[in-house]
Image (tube, rainbow over all chains, first blue to last red; front, side):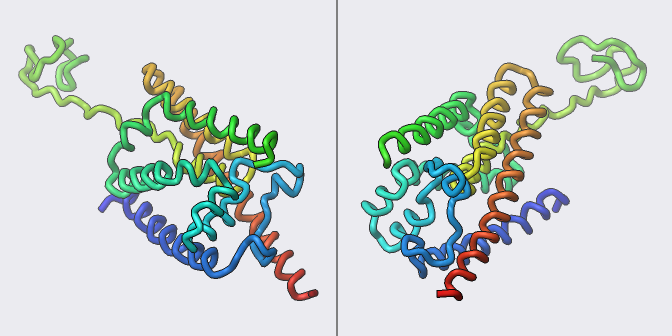
Length: 130
Length: 110
């Protein structure tokens, strides 16, 4: 086993454990009712919504099966959730196996499309108050 | 390309040196430059800071430059994408910890 892949494995195991623990905390406590969950620093500073605002609340709603409520908290996140899961799985797989990332993630169009989508969503959600 | 043994210039696609018959060992194709697109999107959605967007821009540049054959440029952009993803992640974690501590202190005061 090469050194890089050992490092990746340790990081991977730590990330999976942390992700599992975080999912449980987000499932068990409702971020919408002002508990201990951190706020978005960008929103605290500017009063504007960032592209990721509502992620924790949306995740809590989703974990309880409330898809419509999750969509209300972050429309972009819920709309592209299957793509995000597939992208994270593809990236994790390529890193664990030390293989090239999936072809679609290396396509020049992918990165710029994501950038444009994020910026448009950032603007639209503040204009429309979504 | 030149022979590693005698320095003779090799014809393209030669498998052995025509001068000394040393076998030509070709280096494997360089691995693709990692673009950090997934971590960049992750920190943008989860750390709520403009640094994540910076990382997305560099990550997108990696693909564009690699596709154009500019490997050095792609590697530089890759480094920047990685750096900004970590900056966003570190700042996000730090602010989150401070936020949780502040919220817990508030809960205790209630």
